[in-house]
Length: 79
Image (cartoon, rainbow, N blue to C red; front, side, top):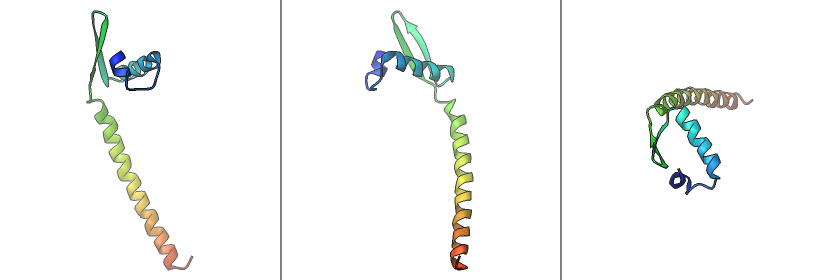
């Protein structure tokens, strides 16, 4: 854990809390080798979030396109 935390400007207990949340969500897995805890990234659970983000992006792109068309229509009508 110390090696993972080194590049981040955060206290080790705070970093441990973040890792615990990621482990609870299934994004990382840990195992203990003696006194060393090793972490492994498990990217599959992120695919659910990615799918949701992609769907949301499509919805918002459509809404922004509609807004752009509405604004263009208002300008053309002189409003």
